[in-house]
Amino acid sequence: MSIIRDKRELGAIFAGGVVGALLRVALLQTHAGAAPGWPWVTFAENILGTFLLGYFATRLQERLPLSAYRRPLLGTGFCGAFTTFSTMQLELVTMLDAHRDLLALAYAASSIVVGYASVHLATQYVRRARTLI
Image 1: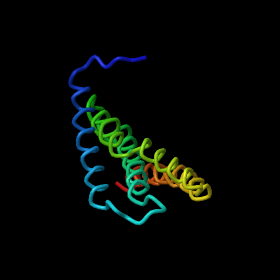
Image 2 (image 1 turned 90 degrees about the vertical axis):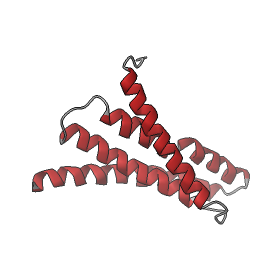
Image 3 (image 1 turned 120 degrees about the vertical axis):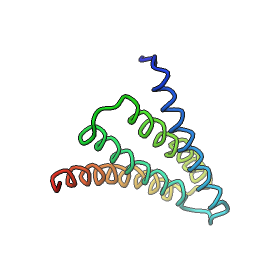
C-alpha cells in the first residue's frame, strides 16, 4: 500500500475532489424529485465522469508534459468525486427491494458497457486529435 508523501499531491487530490463532489451534489439537487425508475442523473454523471477520466488520463499521459499534480487533481480528485459508484449501488439496492430486478440488471449492465465505451471514445478522440495536429 502506497502512502502519499507529497502534501502538494494530496492537496491536488483534495482540491479536485471538492470541485467534483460539489458539482455532483449540485446536479443531484437540481434534478431532485425526478420520476422514479431509471436514475438518469447518476447515470449521466458516471458516464460523463468516465469520459472525462479517459480524456484526462490519455491527454495527460500522451500529449502534455508530465506533471506530478494534474493526474491526481483531475483523475483521482475530480473524476473520483464526480462519479459515484456508491450511489449507483444504493440505487440498485432500491430497485431490487422494489422487485425491479430487470431494471436493476439493465442499469448495472448499461453503466458498465456505456462507461467502458465512453472511456474508449475519449481515448480515441485524444489520440485522433494528436494525429491531426
